[in-house]
Structures are given as C-alpha cells and as structure tokens.
Length: 218
Image 1 (cartoon, one colour):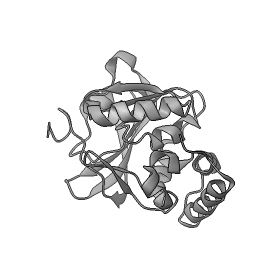
Image 2 (cartoon, one colour):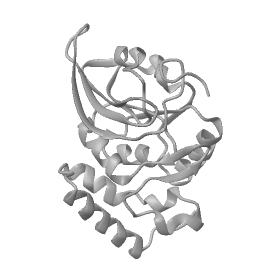
Image 3 (cartoon, helix red, strand yellow):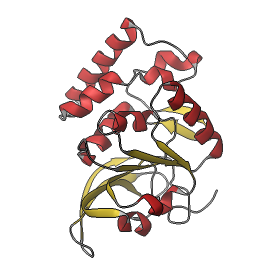
C-alpha cells in the first residue's frame, strides 16, 4: 500500500480550495475530501492525476468520479453522523470512503465482480471496511432497508422503484437520471409512505446503471 505524504496532503488542500471556488459549501464534505487519500485509489502509474478535478478510468469500463461530482452528490445527500447510507455503485471505493468520513453506517453494492473484489481488498487494506456487497444495485439491499440516504453513482433511465421503497420516510435519494449520454441530478425526498418530492438540478455524465431497474444487463 502506498503512503500518504505531506505532498499528497498539500495537493488535497489545493483540491479542496478548488472545490470551494466551484461552489461546494458544506464544510463537513470539504473536510472529508481533504482527509481521504484519493491517490490510493489509482494504480501507481496514474497517481499524478489523482488530485486533478477530473474523472479517470479504473478498468472494467468504469471510472473514479470527478472530485467535484463526489462533493456535489455528497453535499446534496446531507449526511448526518447517525444516518444509514446506501451507495449504489462502489466502483473504486473513493466515494464510499468520503461517505465513511460522515457516518460509519455505509452499505455499498457493486455490480461488477472484478471491481468488487479489487475494491474490497483496497478498503480492507486502508482499514475502511464498509458493508460491501456484490449484486444488482438497481434493486438496492431490501434485507438491510430502510435507509436514511441513498446515493446512486451511475446514470439511470428512471427513478428505480425498489430504491424509493427502501427509503425511510424523511429520507433522501440522490441519483442522476437521463439517457445513456447525459443525466440530470435529482434529489428525491420521501415525504410519507406514498408521497415523494423531487428536485431537478445540474446535468452530469455518468456510466450507466446496470441491472433490472436500470439499463438491464450488459
């Protein structure tokens, strides 16, 4: 495992200031970004890219999200220390690690078996073990529901009904919804057993959400 040096910490401080200039206001989120060593989620050869505000391929057709996107989604989620959070799409584990700085109660599900195994080893080595699962994230984790917050890190064609059902009343779902090229970020709050309010926000581009309630199997 590579180390986290004074130079890396300085690069994170610079990244945090860049995110602040781009409009991220939640100091808890900015602190989490400043703590999590993003370079450890990259192969050694690509570590010089780790603190640039851009997405980067991680193999298996997936990417590690742009830091601004991670901060934006996390800020929308409004995580409290006692919240039970479900993340759909573990990917590299970076977003998951940011969430773990905000609450210890993080459940994360990854569709791709290769990524799941690689990321599980990485998070264990970093001593950041969330509750990790491999499976169809579009269906959520009904056996562990309800959740206070649900975060989807892949683009969905619709609001997946299984995820809405797994939200606690008063809970929030943050998800990009659209076609396979661009999506609009949505924040959905479960107001009662049957009522949901929704807020449509900025456009983003995510990899597709695979699974029965997403784009199907690929």
